[in-house]
Image (cartoon, rainbow, N blue to C red; front, side):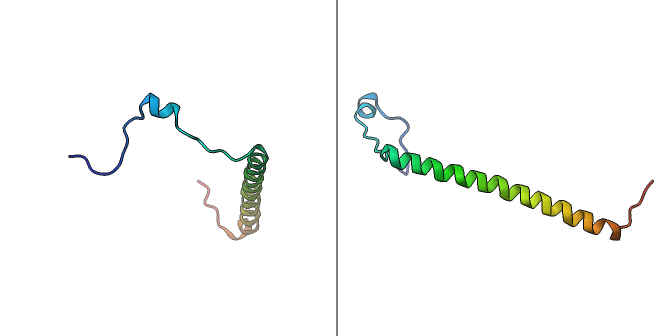
Length: 69
């Protein structure tokens, strides 16, 4: 017996009458700009994290004993 409300497929007749509501073009542009800004922030944050890790590693290097074979 099946439980839940999973729809395996949508009949073509129902699909043709399905209403898809989208924001107006101005709001779509604003959403796209916000997403792009978040992506730039994510990339910049990642780069800052990498640079800080490199600086910490360089600062600690003199205090770490390296075993060479």
